[in-house]
Amino acid sequence: MFNGDRGINYPKDSDMVQAGIPFVNAGDLQEGKVNLATANKITREKFDQLGGAKIKRGDILYCLRGTLGKNAFVDNFDEGTVASSLVDIRPKNVDAQYLFTVLNSDIEYRQRILCDEGAAQPNLSARNLANFDIPVPKIAEQVKIGRYFESLSNIITLHQRKEYGLKTYENRSIHYGTF
Image 1: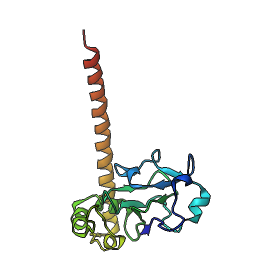
Image 2: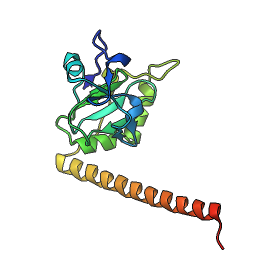
Image 3: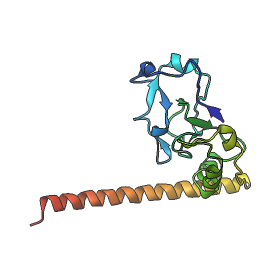
Image 4: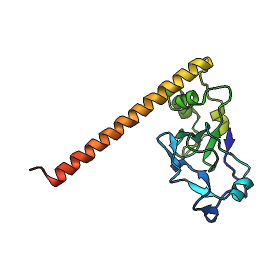
């Protein structure tokens, strides 16, 4: 696990650029993915100054403050870093897609509720997250489980898009009327 840099090099608003390396915050985690269109960007120089998380494809980003447990699987970019409210999880000796599935299940939820350290704002330490009990079957089974839920998620997304398209068409018909 890698925390976002919290030191003197932490990016300020003035460090943000139009095009650069993603500096991901919790708001950029949307439906299990990182929305690069909304993510702030920093220069290579600023990125190299940071001592915290250095995102790689296949990592999982997990929110430790605010919207606890909100997470995303990194599969749409190869390099970036995270704001201090996130932690970058690099799966080791476990299938990444399987771990992502577990982090979106009741297994994670029950432990997160017990470990919430926040008063006014939900808060979870990376240490507590690292101590979550995660069932770890043999790697072949992890792969099957992870791919099954990834496929199921893709099917749900396709049906949601289809439903949205039908509703949009229906609303236009009502708006313009039918003769």
